[in-house]
Image (cartoon, rainbow, N blue to C red; front, top):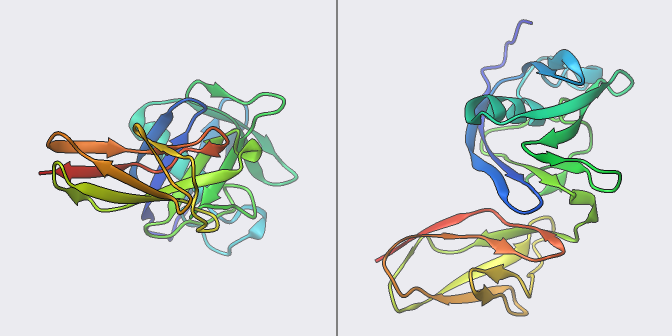
Length: 210
């Protein structure tokens, strides 16, 4: 396959049922992708003639991440849709009621992952049981804080921007405005993530406490 596209770097997050499987940045390039169940097929945006030239896609992002991070994934391939349907990532296997969803910048893709092109700094999310969840949480706030001082973070629905109450960030809970007020008692780097039972957990924020 000749690929005229230089590729791009995106953010990828893979949320399993009970934990985050992977979260980082990755360089991805539209290319042939191989799965055990689906075989080898182009996955570069030219699928179903969605784009005239090849380039990086949501599913090529997953494939490149799996290669780098050494986890497995699988998907069947539909000739009708010219695309893969993801069946498992890591140890998270789809069931008859729980499936993997693909979102880019907190919005469901309008086509399959090999038809969905990604651009620089896009946020690509693969979420287990996505279609049974109410919100896709997004956590924002400062990257530095002072020990003993109140620091405010915000939890929203990434798809709509609406504030989300009742989300846990560590031992703290977001209020009706989505605000979480945290007082760090020790210095060092702190890892924060928002969770709520009916939602896909948020991105990670790393806060340096001085």
